[in-house]
Image 1 (spheres, rainbow, N blue to C red):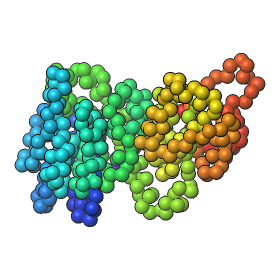
Image 2 (image 1 turned 60 degrees about the vertical axis):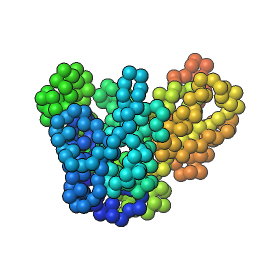
Image 3 (image 1 turned 135 degrees about the vertical axis):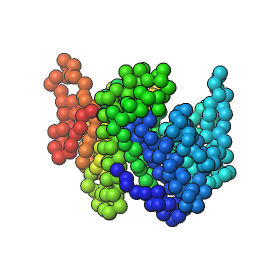
Amino acid sequence: MDNKTPEDFLEIINREKRGSLKVYLGSAAGVGKTYRMLLEGHRLKDNGIDVAIGYLEPHERAETIAQVKDIEQIPVRIVPHGTLQLREMDLEAVLKRHPTVALIDELAHTNSPGSKHAKRYQDVDELLDAGINVITTLNVQHLESLYNVIEQAAGIKVMERIPDAVVAKADQIVVVDLEAEDLIERLKTGKIYKLDRVDTALNNFFSLQNLNRLREIALSETANLLDKRQREQFQAPTKLSALNKVMVRIRGSESIAESEAVLRRASRLASQLNAEWYLVHVSTIEHESRRLSPEQGRLPKVFELAKKMGAQVFEIKEEDVPGALIRFVRANGITHLVQSHPEPKRFWQVFRKSYTEILIQSLPDIHIIMV
């Protein structure tokens, strides 16, 4: 947990040319992220800093709306979408206004069609490039590498996700923590959603079990991110990169969902080890001949996701698949290999070694992790 004060962020603001990013990270809606962001905005304003709200999503919460007070709000864009009128941050207006600090809610938001960028975190990156400092909010379930973890823990599929690297590169990360029982009490009294939505929320996402698990994940992820940053600051990069290297093997027969799960596991492992990681796909003549099939059509999507998550992607054209993988492992000092579980052998394959069996036998010193 980051215990830095608003004064620490003020020091960062004063010394950086590119804008600095501070993230208030929470486990669920209603823990107080937006409230804390606004509170810090007032503290910075009281210190003579030019602060403006780039985008605020108060969700009709009286406590949050009351906290806006005299902080300037830059007008939003109103985007017609069918019968709806969508509110979007006006990126050009924020750039033109150019406050020293912009308060921008809901970092994982997906922008409406026709916007300059698809996602709000990309808008924020442009603001940072322009020298504007940003304080923002995010729930932990929106981190890309946690998609499968969240689905297993809470039974929900999170549609809006952002690359972990966006948060990992933040100058400050502050976890906004609230006991699950206290959060449920806030929900029951109508402080999070309107009262007619309370029963539905309690029976689904806001169960005590879900909230406790999400809280554990938020605290754990924040600790991992801060620990990684500390190691990066106090150890030489060359030494770090030599300690551990993670490689992902994508099999041609697995679905895109299986490939994505493998990537997320590798991304989390690489983050915990503070290691470089690679996606390696060996393409044979047979693979090339099926390049236009649905199976092959998924590969560019998998490669793109891997890059967004911070991997280096290698596609090797080679007929000897296990041989190519073994050579890559040895040439690049790989310490951990992540792949999906192999499919059961067919009756005609019983006496033939699978690629996975060859890898395990040939790489006894490598940690091979099945997802």
